[in-house]
Amino acid sequence: MAPGTIASESVESNDADSPTQSTDLQPKLYNNVDQDALQKKTSQYLLNYGTKFMGDIICGAKGLYVYTANGHKVLDWTSGQMSCLLGHGHPEIVKTISDHAANLDHLFSGMVSPPVLSLAERLCSLLPDGLDKAFFLSTGGESNEAAIKLAKVYTGKFEIVAVGGSWHGVTAQALSAQFHHGRKGQGPLMPGTHMLPAPNAYRSVFRKRGDSGESAYDWEAELDYGWALIDQASCGSLAAVIVECVQSSAGVHVLPQGYLRALKRHCERRGMLLIVDEAQTAVGRCGDMVAFARDGVVPDILTLSKTLGNGLPLSAVVTSDEIARVTAERDYCFYTTHVNDPLPAAVGNKVLEIVVRDNLISNARAQGALLHAGLATLQSRYACIGDVRGRGLMAGVEIVADRATKAPALELARRVADRAYALGVWANLSSHASFGGVLRIAPPVTIAGDQVLAGLAMLEEAFATTPGVVRLY
Image 1 (cartoon, one colour):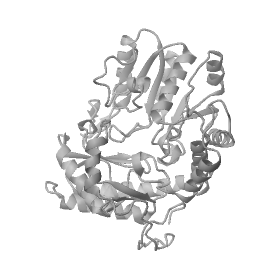
Image 2 (cartoon, rainbow, N blue to C red):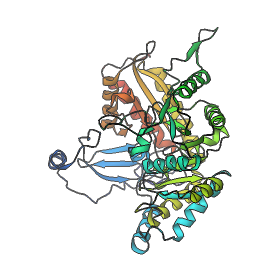
Image 3 (cartoon, rainbow, N blue to C red):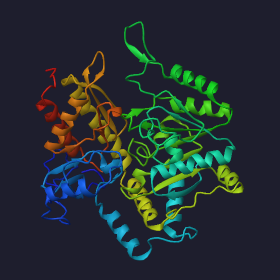
Image 4 (cartoon, rainbow, N blue to C red):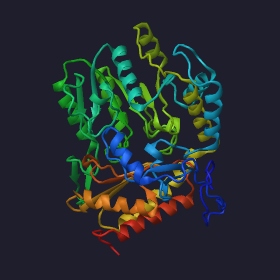
């Protein structure tokens, strides 16, 4: 069993290091729930916020599983909203929440508490020099809002550059730098936002055929082209670039090796800061403590959220001593009700402690390799799988109608995803067409090898039994 794994069900394993689990820990908090009645209340009382609600009512979440009102047990391969890095109901997280709810939950925003200092010290000690000071907020959008404002105050400039396909949040400045979805229907966004081409290696028009006939992605030409357009459009006040190391919402597109370093050079030439948004990728999910470590680049500002709080609302903004000094002198303000709250900070500190103590980054690499090997096998067996991509325990499986044309197959993707869910594995497929029919997979880093294999087996059965899927064997 992987270090830190929570026993969730009886599992037979061929792994000598993964003892059989004997206890089904299905939560009993909501028993005898009438799903039909609750579905009616969903329509009657819940305001739509941009997604279709699922039909099932979820009444429990424990370990790597969620449970519906009708008793359906589902392997949660998205860690909730890509956030429960250690799984649901981790006993040490539960104890931390309970202790702080009873003894140190929320304070006046100018007060300082031990868990906030412990989290700041632990987090900064795990990051490279140049990421020296932190403060803590609630959501990823909020942290990106704060980071963009920090960059504007430091540079004295206001133009922000982001990347096509990006998702940074739904508050004003974060949404203005978001080029995937959510921009319409509200009038003008923040002035001075620019977009670089989406680094989509699978579909980019900057794919070129070599002498061998194989096509290769010329991301450097694409990036230079994007900057040439921005230089023409800019009014001369370029402040910062914000970028994700893996564009999860766009379909799990990994930045090409060297892209982040090249982006940093472009920033330095223009006197801009580099903001890296690691909402989903940090704290081990991609096989490193932070995903930017692969490229040997240190951002000027780092934002963390989802994985840091293990499902609780916790985010972080981290920057250098120099940026912290200058922005303090210029009266930078991001004063909120829940800034540096002790309870979520205690949870974040415990998450980092567990990830390091239990070698969960190594587990993410090992189980990620198993996951990607299994998905590659599925790609060799089913014609509708056009591309498999990702890093560590983060993967995207793109469903297409034809591999040659790469025409999307949104309806087929929906049927495959629905079938997988019915069989007992949840791999998120957005209902919005902008996601392009990509199954997004990001299980907790506590996952064991037998649980990876069990999920792959259910996913294979989903492909094998969904009408319209063409087998290649």
